[in-house]
Length: 226
Image (cartoon, rainbow, N blue to C red; front, side):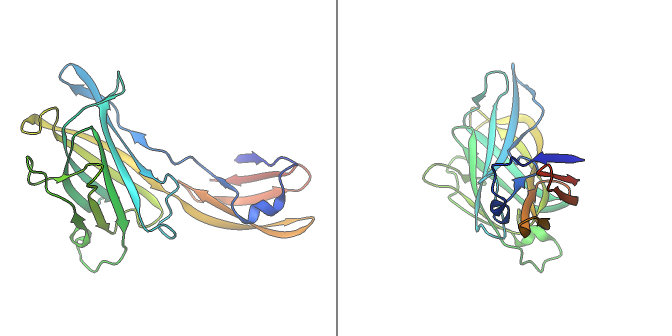
């Protein structure tokens, strides 16, 4: 049972706009692994962090490859990025980025009649001159993925393979694989009865649905289960 204390000074009228995030959405870093004499990892996150595909038309996917001990980016990186929902592949594309933090614009589109969902996903961007099978990601040229990914609430898996690093012409001896999760929040609305009447609370949860949502007028406390 989770309990959130609502301070007496908080006006109940604010509830109708938005009550709380049941869990912070930030990015996730994969466990570090060895790369030469360094420990490296990948972190992924969406911007905005509270991205809502029902309201927002696009988001930016960040994929950062860095030294986990010094927190410094590994430069000149060739990535293969895959996005999955459960075991279903939604997107797969190679990218090249010079500064170690890949930016990809995501434009969710749920319409897809293909049996293999990934076939509905389209990619736009400039091909890298050194790694022609990869789309380059720079401040002036951010690639786009348009398709049925991050288009609904729930967890999405982001698999990142580092194919080359430090020198774009040199591949790693074998791909360095990482896996992270990005959760898209779901919205739930609950009616609450107070002394001033009924009001509606909107809650955004990044994992399980909330149940048994109750408001105690005497203590100004909201409780719920998840």
